[in-house]
Image (cartoon, rainbow, N blue to C red; front, side, top):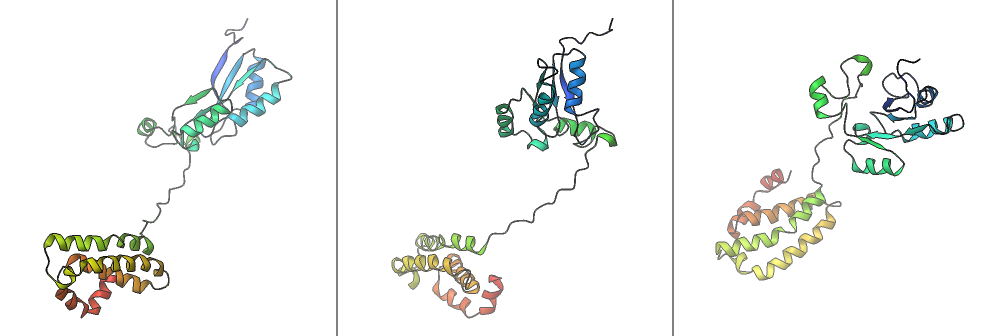
Length: 232
């Protein structure tokens, strides 16, 4: 008489090969051993992927010898499945998975307990992750800078009106505002052909936004070196 009778039992936690960690056998081998022992079924688990494919092939291999033996697939929400990924869960359940595990070896609590994620504390069960490459910081393209400049003319004239400027440029605001707005919109299409011209035009618009006196603008225009250094 056996010490433990496995007849009708289900194992809800079976790891099988192939896997980054060493396993005692693949899904077909393990399912065959369990069925021969009289068990009713098992759940194949993986830390790294959903086990839909593993279970599919194990079922086909055992359907003739053990037609009543149940094999169920599952998914664990570690980095291999995109972490806590509702889409991965939806897909796995749609393909027949019966068990969903929250993150295991990639969970925050696991990383605190073992010092890092992807390990169980010894080399045979430690993933060799390649160091992640930090992407270079994104810089706004010239076209995006020119898009932002289309809002500057309205800001220029609204600032002049609030400040009560009496300069000649301010008194001609009803005329200059639509002209500058149209010219700025047009310059967006010239940014690739004449970037220096577009950059200088953007600097010109911004300089009007900072000062409301036309005489001060004339003094700045006499210093092209200052304008060029600022444009770069």
